[in-house]
Picture 1 (cartoon, rainbow, N blue to C red):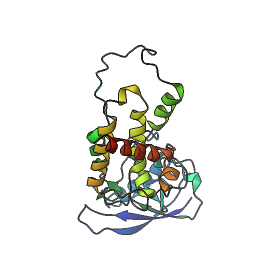
Picture 2 (picture 1 turned 60 degrees about the vertical axis):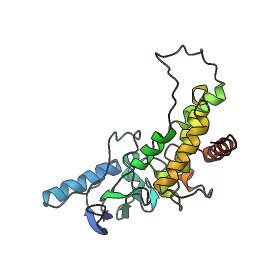
Picture 3 (picture 1 turned 90 degrees about the horizontal axis):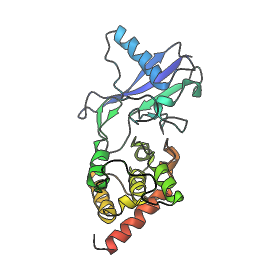
Picture 4 (picture 1 turned 30 degrees about the horizontal axis):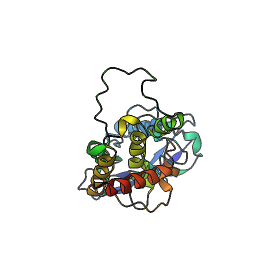
Length: 247
């Protein structure tokens, strides 16, 4: 396949940035999207041009580092991570627009790389449990209803990629927070900090400059791990309870 790529280039956070156009030939439908960018960077290196900076690590859809806005959609046209998106999702002659996440809480570092450390600070504010578990406990020593355990496991699959923020017109991280709060709140070990967790995380979320949730639902639609929208309801319920308890 031959493709035209419109790619955002920005030298650092203070640069205004601009779109640049590149041509890529001989793209195999079996390539991943990141492999296609690797081919482009090899061509740029051969021409002594600055390669395009983008994040990646596991390339297995686990870490969320590969986050890109592709043709206006987080991670592209499939419900998956960018590294697991394959070029068979595009056609010969297509023009593809590639941008970094667009959110004030995720400042651009260079080209397609953004600083998502705001998520880390939200987790540091309360996304943990202080129960001293010691060595691994016997599996049935703490009874947990199966539905609660499965819900905790399912929402714990959030990889913190930020697609929810990029998809949200308000730049809200409520789906991310809701996943973390629901994950810990469903389990007995998460109860001691339940009230302080939600108030501290929401306060940090607002301090970082994320927007408010208006239940549009784009976040859940874009999530590569299919975190359900109802975790935001759980977030709001826990927040109301915490405020009622004086937190």
